Image (cartoon, rainbow, N blue to C red; front, top):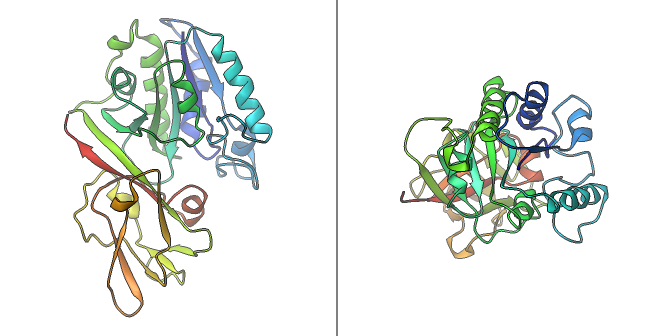
Length: 295
């Protein structure tokens, strides 16, 4: 039995689309499949697919840990109770990025998870020892799983890729026999943490911004590009406005002197996700930093 979730974030439509397309036309399935449709209320709030979560609501992909309060956490506990009774072989959780990104997968470990990921992508980012209250963390207690970031939200190509990968995942007779979704060599990265903007700091994009932290336009063009030390991605006034979470802080972002009180932010690693709007960056994080591994 295999499991797939989509739409835990209301502003990420590809998971919704993939799950609904499979329900409309399941075709020949290799095994029983359990599907979870996520935060429908957030997806339908205001303009469809514009809200990650309801205003003043919780992020549905942060409520899966024990003891988390709120209605969404109650739904998560009910879903986990059902899943715990099932003989799951593997699971996937489908998401989007808000900025430009190639498709990539996230897992807690490698091994057989490469086979799951390859239904969509050959890029795998490892997040060992990271605990954020996600569905993936709970899924791993029972069966191997991956999160798949299916490309930019709102791009029809992302929706098609999500749906095509899901079909490959549920139709393969074995996990080792899942067809590959894209050509090219396998690439593996290890997360070094996520860079979070301090809550009190005003964030803006572009040189004309009056915010304290001014990030360059089209910052997402650097996603999955290995950056040299000293690459300028933004400027800030005053005390450093960023915090590195979930990684070794001694290897965190560094500031370099600049004109007057402005300083340039530089990274010496590979970013694997950067949003393009201040609202999303403040809700989640400014970027994830990673390092490329061999093989």
